Image (cartoon, rainbow, N blue to C red; front, side, top):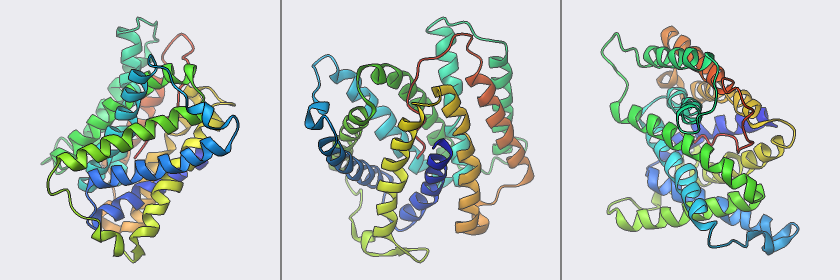
Length: 304
C-alpha cells in the first residue's frame, strides 16, 4: 500500500507540472486540489459509518485542525507547486524530503528524546547530497526561488508530522484528513481573493503536452490526493509510521523517472545529482531511525 501510494504521488508530480505549464497558478492549483479532495472526502465521511457524526469537533480541537490544515495541506503543496514549476520534479522532491531531518532535530532538542549517533551522520549525508544536487562547486544553476520553496515545504512538512502525531491520537484518519483539506480549501479561497492577478480558469479548457487539463485535474484530486492518503492511512494499521515514511522515500526516485519519461530532457539528472539524491535518501533513512524511543504513529509525508 505504501509503494502504491508512492507511485500515485510520483505520477502526481508530473501531472501537477503539466497543469502549471498550461497556465494555472500555484495558488489556483492548491485551491483546486483542496476543494476537490474535501468534496470527495465529505461524501466518504457521510456515506461510511458512523456518518456525519465523525466530523463533529470540539472548540479545543479547532486550533490543531487549523494549524494542521494550513501547514501540511495548504502551504506544503503550494510551495511544492512553486518548486516543481522552477526545478526538475525529482530535485524539488529531494528538497522536500529533508523534512524527516527536521523532525528528528525537533525530537532531540525540543522534546529531549534520546537519539543515536546516526542522526548526525544522516544529517551530514543529506547536506552533502543536497550540495551535489545543487552542484555547489559550479555556477549554481538551480533556480534560487525554487530551492527556497522546496526547503520551505520541507520545514512545513516537518510541522505536519509533529501536528499530525497529536491529531491522529484524537480523531480517526478520515475525519482528520477531511477537516485538514477543508481548512486548506478555505485558505485557498482567501488567498485567491487577496492576491490580484492570480489568473482565470481558462486554461482548464486547454491541453498540456497533449493531455486534456480537466483530466489531469481529475487525477490530481483522486489519484494524487484522496487515494494515496487513504492507502497511507490503511498502511499505518500494519506498519509503524517510521517504516511507512522510509518505504515512501522511493517517491523521489519514481517521480524523477516519471518526469523524465513524460517531460523529456528538461527533467534529466546528471550523475552528480543522482549520487546526491541517493545520499539524501540514505541520510534521511538514518535520521528517521535515530530515535532511541519508538515514535508515535503519525500520517505519512504529503508530497506535492
